[in-house]
Length: 234
Image (tube, rainbow, N blue to C red; front, side, top):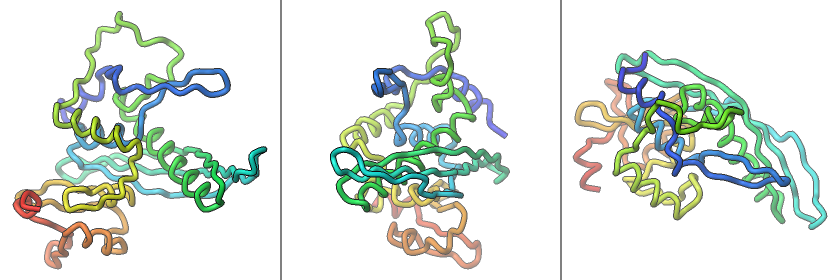
């Protein structure tokens, strides 16, 4: 299923610069940011993957001592990773997210996004160490490990530095070069010959979002496409 280069990349240790730390209840936890995981998946799998949210539901609601709404959501995310022949492997996992805000709407928004992010990262970690599976290990990742660190391409590193400035993978800017709006609804943009094509489940029901990114429907091949030349000129 995976190519030799993909297997090699997936087996490398995490670059320490990608690992973030957060303190909760007096304990320190290591994690990867969602945009970072998506960028690495796009690089290793050559954009030939997608994900769908198979369940998203509220599981708890309360008000804290500051009169803020505290809402918790649970999500299940399914990931499909494709090869050049359109064969795919499938992974699924669950995640939980909590949102705290003055308004119920903002708390729901934060909680649902956090739950989906958590589920997506937990699902992808089964693919290899590049997605943070080793962060769950109780054994420290020391220099005695003989594997090399995965060095990301310079272009990807530059992209991640730009994303650091936003600190939010839900990018609102929907320019022709920015397909985050499609990734966020479970679709993927990939190269196919001289075109970019959109793949994913329930693709036609999401046609308004796809058309907004400049893609056109080809009735003969049943795909949404845009020429790479058009993308470069945009």
